Image 1 (cartoon, one colour):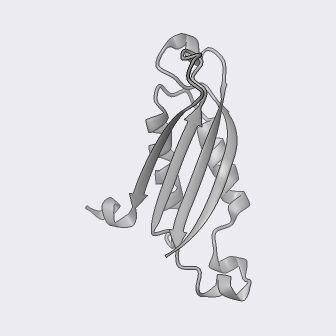
Image 2 (image 1 turned 180 degrees about the horizontal axis):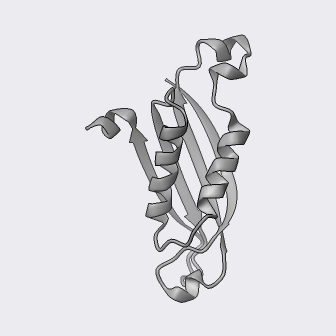
Image 3 (image 1 turned 120 degrees about the vertical axis):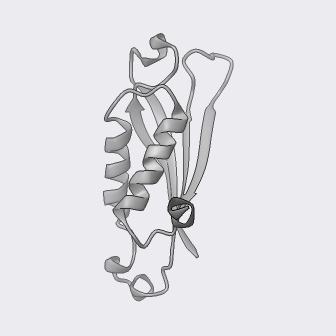
Length: 123
């Protein structure tokens, strides 16, 4: 299976458990990896055989910035669900969400990583 990665999709989101952390949008970064077979049209240099990276990036950013959340875990799960629903050729998706927690000044970054696949979806 082949992979396409979007690294460091920067978003502004109100996210965090303490209310003071959600008062202002924070910078979060998303890494999104999709697994699919790229041996067909994509190998012949045709966009129709692959995922449109720009459209995916815009959809991920729009989702991340659309509402307030408590947990990075919730955002990661929503992104994974979005990716699987957008393109039936995607066999699995890997999502990492990272932020510098406003309430943890001595911690550089917190990251959550999840993996979802169509197989798991059907179970």
